[in-house]
Amino acid sequence: MSTDIDDVPFDVEDEIEVGDLSEQEGGVLPAAQRVIGEIKKASVKRSLLDNKYPEASDNPCTFKYLNLEVAIGPDGIDGQGTYAGKHLFTGMMDIILTYDEEACRRKKEAGGGKFNPQWWSKEARYGAKQFFKAISGDVKNVKVNDDLLLSLPGMPIMFDIKKEKDTFKGEGEFRNTLANFRAVETQED
Image 1 (cartoon, rainbow, N blue to C red):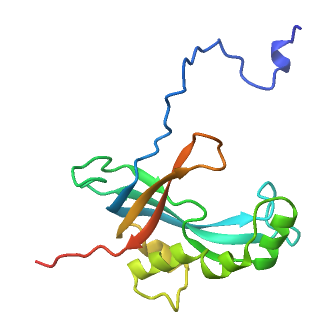
Image 2: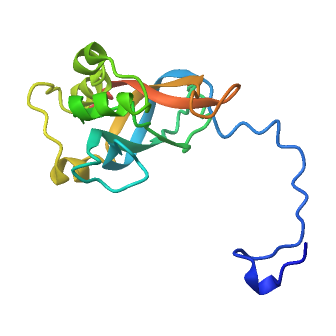
Image 3: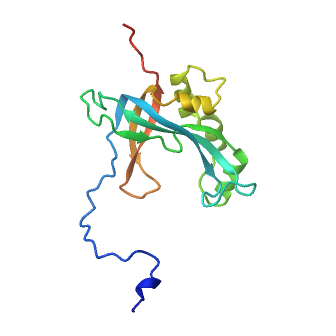
């Protein structure tokens, strides 16, 4: 089949021999505990009933979560500097801020996941509780606003890096999640 080069909807390239990719690991780090890092960026993200379309009354936000970019500190993950400076990101389930029970239920009914009311009401926001306890000690009067988001970059934070199976990508794939946030003790001179 011959196609006129002007009708092709992409740039025509010479063949590129990529080779064997089976050993690529995707930057997934080994699990580590009590890693000290620094928050570089913070934002609030949304998970929609159908993420292909913008938020609307017929496509509500199922939950909001805090998205952090964190750089591993100079001691690395092992006290020897391994992976020092490496940037990691929290996942959408790591620091859930709020959820809409009805929208979560609708997502399950549409075949878009599980909905366990007990988990959502008692466990889903545990990562948020740990994070806010680490940065302020206050877990009863938590408010996320522009002032808070602007105050987070540059803040030190201690966390664990978990290595777990990535259920979205398939068999044999792994991802890192950040958990067990703790305050970093500073030493005064």
